[in-house]
Image (cartoon, helix red, strand yellow):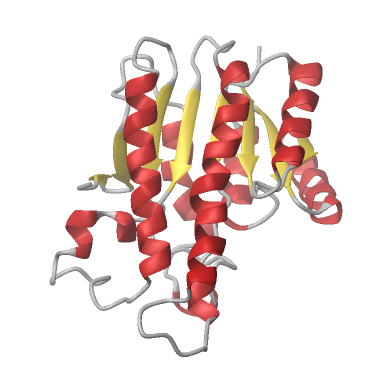
Length: 245
């Protein structure tokens, strides 16, 4: 019986690359996407080269689409084995307006996707994950959300002033810990991953300067999605191993 995987923001970038890896290994991968055209293009490409790929309309900032997606997956598959909370935004990267600290609207926009969206999706899909014999939740975060790293003057990220993004990822990391504690008596394991600096559409800098391809970065996502039964839950990792909270 194939593993059923849902990836939010799965029609491009890191999500698409993770979908390719997982479908190639035999999983049934469901692309969660806001736009039908992009989703169908991804499904066609992945299905032709890899395996069983499906899609659902899912905008993490629109709870009605999340509920509809859950209903569709329940009807089609009856359960969910892996949830990859991949959708994320970094609007500060292209904000050219002047702020003393930050634009509150940018904060709201960032948290709406990076935090509240993850909460909405996870809460809605937990009943389907509880039907799995080995549920896995993967939260795609960033080392820039590590409080230890933020306070480390030797970190390459130390000079970057991105308060909305950094704090949203710190909140996501905290959510991973709380969720893992909440689910400690179940078979569901929760992991936060940092894929690294990846060539994606997240920001112009990612497109132009990032050293990692999405395919390379996807390995840490796939590893967290396929944790063995004896693996620890509630961890924060990147390709090199544990990341300090």
